[in-house]
Amino acid sequence: MSTAAATVPAGQEVGGHRAQVWRMVAALAVTSTVSYGTLYYAYAVLLRPMAVALDTSTTAVTGALTASVLAGAVAAVPVGRWLDRHGGRGLMTTGSIAATGLLLAWSQVRTVEQLHAVMIGIGIAGAMVLYQPAFAVIVSWCGPDRRSTALLVVTVVAGFASTIFMPLTGLLVEHLGWRHALIVLAGIHGAVTVPLHLWAVRRPGSVRPPADPGRAADTRRRATVDAAMRDARFWILVAVFVLHGTATSTMTVHLVGYLVSRGHPPTFAAATTGLLGVLSVAGRLVFTGARRRLAVTAIVAAIFGTQAAAVALMPLLAGTRTGAVIVVVGFGLGFGVASLATPALLADRYGTVAYASVAGRLAAPVTVAKATAPLAAATVLHATGGYAVLLTVVAACCVSAGVGLLIRRGNQ
Image 1 (cartoon, rainbow, N blue to C red):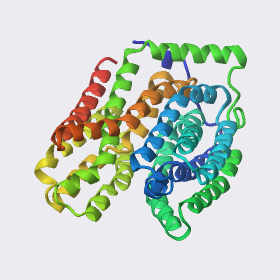
Image 2: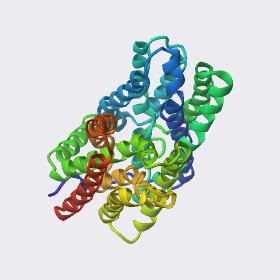
Image 3: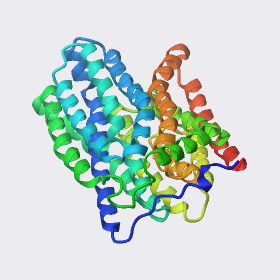
C-alpha cells in the first residue's frame, strides 16, 4: 500500500548546525531522565508514606497513578498535533513549568481526591515533556542517518532514571519526609528541565529551513495522518504495541510478587526485578547495533519471541536464583526496544511532516493498555489464586506481538 512516506521528505540537518542538534539531543537526554525520575519513578517510593499520611489504602493511592497515566494517554493526540504545527520548545518549556508547580502541589495534598486531581495534571504535563515530544523533536530535526543514534542517546541515558531517582527519593523520604522530598524533587525538576527546554529545544526554522507556511503545511499534515489512519499496517502496529505494552507493564508490577511466590526473599526479588531498567538499556544497544544488518521488524519480532520464551520458562527455572536471573534477563532485553522501534517504523512509513500526530494516535491506546493491564492482572491473580494463567497470557501477548510485526512486514 502506498502512503505519504513516498512524497514527504524526512527532516534533514543543515550543514553548520550539527553541533546545535547534538546539544539539543544531550539536553533532551537529561530532561527525559529528570522528568521520568520525578514524575513517574518516584511514585513507587512515595506510595506507602502517602497512604499512611492520607489514611487510605495503597490501592487507592495506586489508582491515582493509573489516573495520571490515562490522562497522559488522552493528552497524547492533541500534544502530537501541537508538536507538528509549532515544534517542541514552547510546549516542553510550558510542560516543565507546569510539572514543577504540580510537584509542589503534590507535596501539599491532604485527601485522596486532591491526590487524584494533582496526578491527572502531572499525567498531562508528562505528555508534554517525556518521550513523545522528545522523540518528535529528534525525528523532526535529525536526518535519517543520525536519527537512530540520537534516539539511542536519549533512551540510554533516560533508562537510568529509575536507578538514579528511586534511591534518591528514598533517601529524601528517610531524612526529610515525603512532603519535603517532593519539594526537593520539584526544585530539581524546575532547575534542570525549564532552562534546558527553553535554551536547547530549537524553534521551527532556527536549525533547518522553515516548513511550508500556513495552509500548505496543514494540508500535508492532514493528508499524512489520514493516510496513516487508512493504512492497515498502522493498526497492526497499534495492536502489536498494545499487546507488548500489556505484557511489559504486567511483569513490571507483578514480577516481584511472582518471585516471592517461588520462595525467594523479597530483597532478592526486588533486586532481580530492578535489573529490568539496566536490561532495557542493553536491549536498546542490541537493537541499534543489529539495525545495521537486519530489518527493524525482524529484530523486534525476535526480541519479542525471546521474551515469550523467557516467560514460558519461568515455571521451570525461576525456582532457583540462577534460573530466576536467566529468565528476567531474557524478558528484560525487550523492555526498551519499543521506544526505539516506534520512531523508526513510523518515520520510515509516513515520513516526518506529521510524525508527532501519527505517534500520538499510536501512543494513546498503548498507554491505556499499560495503565490498565496491571489492574486486570491483579484481578486474574485474585480469581485464579496463582500465576500460571497470568504467565500464559503474558507469553501469548509477546508471541502475538512478534507475529503481528511479521504479518505487517509481509503486507509491505
